[in-house]
Each structure stands twice: as structure tokens, then as C-alpha cells.
Length: 298
Image (cartoon, rainbow, N blue to C red):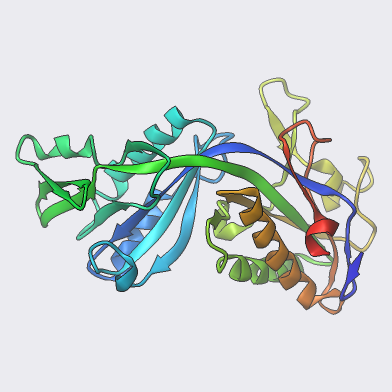
């Protein structure tokens, strides 16, 4: 399969089951909602070392938020419910409770309820007040700039983590430009996040390492500087490879994100140094969700 001169490899991305939740952060203005959201989703690129994968889903207008203020929807993914609940609560307490003018609301209806502000209320030292509105419980916690309003719980649902594709280009600037175009297109798809910095990862990994202490190591088959010393998957003209990883609430959500992202890369085409689109998999052993590139782009 070739699209605008870009070869789509006959391979698949491999993903695995996760648990996910969404939260809505609002503030006096979009600037402060975004600051809080960026803090809450920091250091959350990979479950390998961060405990969760998190990212900003989208900016919300005042008519889309529970309190009629500017907001940001964030999503957090983890390998299990216990870990997800811990990450959500810790990050909310350190990054939203602390952020000026912030409020915090559930972003998923249904699913299994997990604490959002349920335990953060204890920061109020007995001065906190519970309110029930429309069947939902909220907490008003006194803080120095006024009060912190938070919904007690949000929903946890089954999700999919690890969808991905690789962009193979003739140079590093060309690979990055293609990934930036892909991320801009993918941000328009709901229910997905791209958790790595700016949505892009340059240190794609493989399972295992020559060092027993490491569970993952550099994907040497796609490292341009190792063409002469390893079993490479790169032709001579490929000098840079970058990866985009996608987490989504369903396989269909990731399908949509991959389709628009890959199309954005292909729109730049071979004329801009983009040679191939590939994907990371481990022979089907990592997870049950397989995203076949040519099927997605068909």
C-alpha cells in the first residue's frame, strides 16, 4: 500500500487492556485551567516507569463545563483500577487543589465510581461542606483564595493502551514535522490521548534488554545510527524515526485516531521526505488488540 508516495507497511500495532478515567478541570480562565491540567498530567508518559499514562484530551468552552467556566478535559490510564484511583487522587491533590481558582469534576458518567474529591475533602480540616445537586455529591473545601469545589467521584471504565505508528523519514526535521501534523489532526478525535511529550516519542522501545534489570530497551532495528551493527529494519535513506502512541477508551477510538494521524503524515508525502509508516508490535504477545495499518487506511 502506497499513499502519496509513502509506503504503509503490512504490519500491525499491538495494544493491551487498561483502565481509564476522565476529569474536568475548570478555572477563572483558560490559562489557569490549562496550567492545572498540564501539572496534573505531567510525568505520565508510560506505565513502565510513571505509574500511569495521562494527557490533555481537549479544551472545553464555558458552555461545556459543569460550572460554566473555561475548562480542560484530562484523561488518565493505568494497568489496573487500584493504581488508577491512586494516581488520580494523588495528582488531583497536588496539582488541582493547589492551583488558583480551580475546580474539579467527573468527566465520565457510568462505569465504576472511584474517588475524585471524596478524600481531598479532608484537607478542609473539618470545615469542608458537602452538597448534593442533581443526585451528585460535591465538596466545598475552604482554601486561602476562597474555596475548592470538587465532585466526590468520577467513573472508571475499560480502555485500550499502546496503539501506535512509526514515521520513517529522510531527516529528523522531516520526521518531526510529520508527527506534529499528525498530532494536530488526532487532537480532534474524542476519547483518546497521546501521552508522550507533545504526543511524540523518539525513544521507541522493544521488550527486554541485555541488562537483566531493564524490562525494555531501545528499538535497535529502527535506530538509524545502528544500521551497520544490528539487524536493521531501515533502508539507507532513512535517517530518523519517530513514534506516536495512542491510548483510547475503545479500539474504535484508536482506529479513528490512527487513521487521521497517518493520513496527515501521508498528506505531506514523499516530497517532504516521508518514506514509510510502520508500527511497533511484539509478535502478538503483548496484548490482544491489534491495529493493522493497511486495514485502517483502506
